[in-house]
Image (cartoon, rainbow, N blue to C red):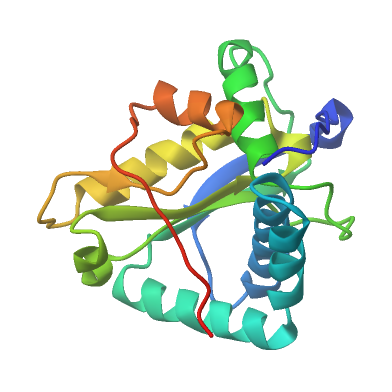
Length: 212
């Protein structure tokens, strides 16, 4: 799930990041931009060429509309189930104190992406998506569906803050099992290190077959 890109530290100069709930009126385009990067990273880093092409082919305009409609449905049930990291321009980012989390923050970012966004004026640095309680019966637990941070904001603590927000949302849910679960490739050591630091451990495996 990694392409080996390094962070662009200068990209955050003069900017700060604040977490807030997803806004369906102003955030859809930026969220879709992040979602595409997330999916392309999964396709390129967790399988062969066949998986990469499948992921690339599915990212159509129709898929994007369906995804954003689904996000809207989820946020109607819980407005905080999607948390975004908004880039606030014109403020000084404090990089001191983030060095301890920098490596793990870079790991989760690199594990979920392939390259930079084509949009040069990004409004969001990342996001995390926890399925609402209404879907808890899928796994009998809270589900961390997606977490992604732009390459230039890795090593700044954004991923840690997003994970903390996800855990807070999950802890408020009435669940059959008191667990927060996610799907991660066992061979992805970098992502695994990030999740392990946040208290995750392997709990079963996922397999898949093609539908005709």
